[in-house]
Length: 262
Image (cartoon, rainbow, N blue to C red; front, side, top):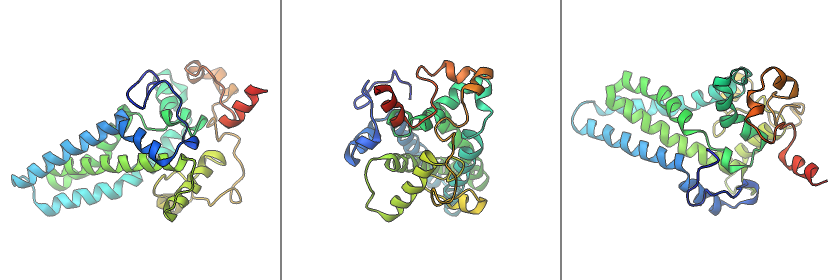
């Protein structure tokens, strides 16, 4: 989210999930402009898909197949994106991609509980969801299937974003499954970023060997908060540093705050 964006809950105040409760998070979630946009896209795409079914432009079974395909492809797409794009070391090398990388992932890792930089950027998320879902939907049921698949992917994005927020929230979830995914995601953010790439679904981590239970399974990473973008890298590729007033981010944000107070 652009730091200048203001609406309702989203003012100039700082919002840190480790100091918020579930009710406050839910209020913030439904006031966030990207979530409103996702819901609008899902409603419009879903309405056109239903219209296509009622008009006989596609049969029910192929459309359901498109929905199912989108449902199962979503975690694959986001695993690959998270592992090979967001945790890559090529986006900071160009001024054309450095700002996007900083916005969609570097800022989140440098300050994991900051709600203002946790949500994905709308201009990157929607095209990604469309590319991951619409082609297979179209192949199965034409434009009706493509729109049904898109609606499915966007709804999954809303669910993904909400549970991602909960994982950073300062409370112990009552639902056992949520406690589990929170534990593994916190390890990704505060212990070793080279694993546990799934947010709500860790199946692909287990299949592809990137899943780990916790600190006992992997050494602590020196780059967990800066993703490898340090002073030495910045000498050659300064684009992210120039966009980051409080750079460098090399430590836990709570530690940085303590250091600033001393």
